[in-house]
Length: 303
Image (cartoon, rainbow, N blue to C red; front, top):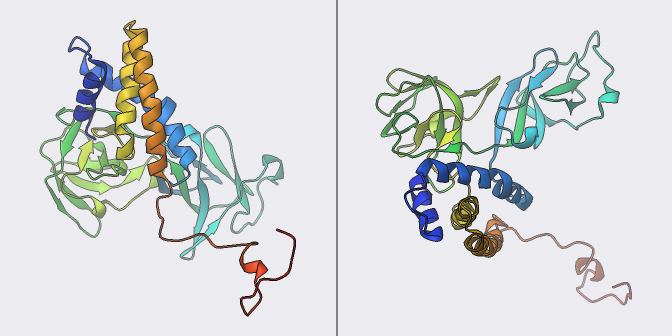
């Protein structure tokens, strides 16, 4: 759902007049995304909004990705010899401190803003999976914050995207398809629309060659689309209308919108999981354990 479409639906839901500015509606929608919908999407446990960043440690430390929701990580792995090794999270008390010689780290722990390897003298390239916070909403028609990609020319090192003049040197790339994922975060953009690298602060990320026509190049931490599953669009519109009406003093109307939002969220929740229904779960401890090799039920009473 585009931000402009969201605004129209919010106004329709709450009969909100043009006296309430578009920017006010978008700020209210951002607040609803962060306080209600993001926590709900994480509970689904289906890897929505999860992305990876490759980060080289410095003195045994790596900064958390700048858009990590809740300053949290989903998974930390070490890249070594073309293989991935998953690191366990350890208690900081287990850190023996700098070691004279250390190979691969045995684990990690978190402090206020970073990942600390154990032992702290370890050096590694980490692949960090985390829940990415969607960019703040902006209108796709805002020339200072958003451009639509009209052509893409992949290259071995750089990728050229045609967007028209853009004064920014650091940008995000947001998918125009139904998933609306951030394909690149804090990428360097040179004149003429050349993506020099796709890098977060202190970490390289996804290959820009996946960028396509009709994707968006935006200011950092901005998005012209609701970067959530499409099924949550109506829920977001209703919740935003409820918030705005409450702020305007229309409490009864706000309550009606909130009740409808609860119903829409329950319906959407059922659509968000499972994301794949083609792989049935393995039977365990039940039917198979009660059959012998010939397929005859065993005479057991431990049901």
